[in-house]
Image (cartoon, rainbow over all chains, first blue to last red; front, side, top):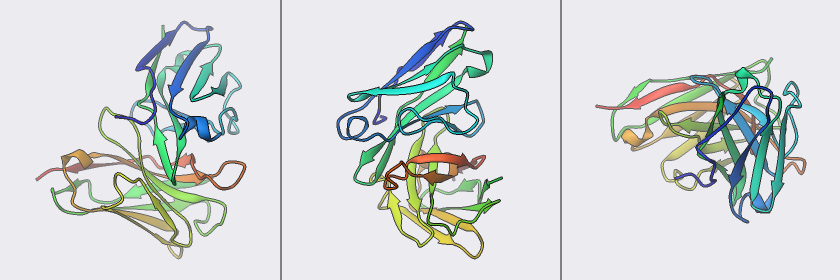
Length: 110
Length: 125
């Protein structure tokens, strides 16, 4: 069982926006601004999309944005494209030198 | 461009020790700027952090695996390694190595910004 809770699936049509939630506790998401999001295509390594809640690494389109409220973090993908169809994982510093992940959300572009 | 590559046996017998090495190219592992980490993913399941190691050998391990995990670093070879003892079928997974960057405070190294391609390790007799 994952430390962080994500919905197993999400979907949207091309051009639309979709938001994926990630719920933790005050000991992880709520306690630190160390939330990150990863995209993973089938058979590939994960790719960092968002770090420190809302920062984008170089090369990640601004269609991807992150936020946090209390113990819940969110990833919003705007202007959905076919290539956005993938698994998305949230993660957070979990306190006591621990790093925790969510169970993953499969995003389907309809 | 930084690249990481995992290597090691793809098949390990139950109760034995899993050993993997990550070779880093295009950058030095001997840096104060990053930690180096291992993350695994059982088939069809989510990601699990195993541990991080610094260039000087300082380590942090997942509490649930701490009793079985040992990580080491060889700066002369630009490599770091993972050993997981007493493996069972539950340890069957794709094992990734990654470069770990920190938050703005420089204290929490929890952002994996470069990943290896992954190595499937199966535990079976």
